[in-house]
Length: 164
Image (tube, rainbow, N blue to C red; front, side, top):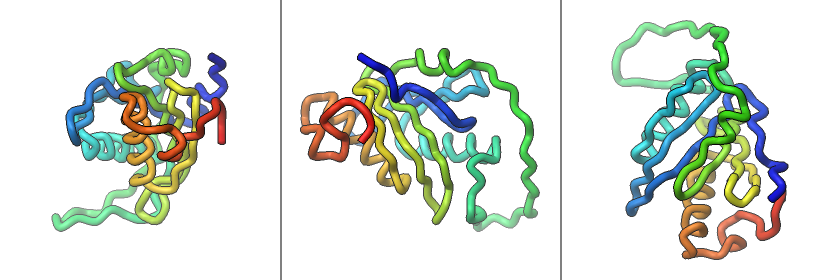
């Protein structure tokens, strides 16, 4: 299979490896270029918090809204720190999950959500998403499809190989 969609391309690109699904719980790992260690994921909310913390740590993409909290905190000024890559793109792309593998490239954090593109490595298909919710639905539909439960065309992933 031609792997034309397999690339990282941005400093905040991550590889999501899904190993197990049980009802609403999704277990797996995420990898990024700045650490050799994987971040373990036990559910969707942990995935989102890990990714948000990662984006905040590299200050990319920069959020258009500030986070809010009920706790009283002093506002902190975030400065971008130069990070050293610990893993090459080829190493990142060699990581795979038991049920599915995705490359997530968030291009913007606007309107209190994320916009970007996701590549389903197992099928070499790439789609754009306009919100975190849409990204989660694409991952879910891909995993259902991998399990033989749904038709690709019904859940947003194109039937033919390559980009839409």
